[in-house]
Image (tube, rainbow, N blue to C red):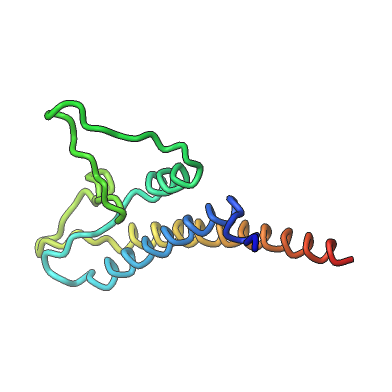
Amino acid sequence: MFDLVSSNPMIQAMDQSMTLATRRMALIASNMANIDTPAYHTQDFDFNGALKNELAKLDGNQMPITRTHPMHFPIQSEASLPPSTDELRPNYERNDGNDVSLDRESLLLARTQNNYQLSSSFAQLELRKLHQMIRDARA
């Protein structure tokens, strides 16, 4: 039997986007929960980069990467989220070693929620199209 939902590239892409957004919201919530924890450092990942990587995997356009010289950066073959980068880190640290900024985390949470809602809307639109096609085929 042909599965209309899992074979739809738009639904697959939106599923990946919502999965990454959910993971990022969990990290942001953890950061906010640890705002008063001494020596806690924020955790985050590059959402746009991770999404581009996942979409390339879905399209089959991802180029195989090989390490051709020992001085090149190591290749990450893990299926987990990309590591946090320095530009994602806040540029200050409190006296207790904590670098969580409530303003920064709130902004990131709002942006990530918007990404999730947009992906959800696109997925719902695609599902409505499929539903309409099925109804039209029955008539």
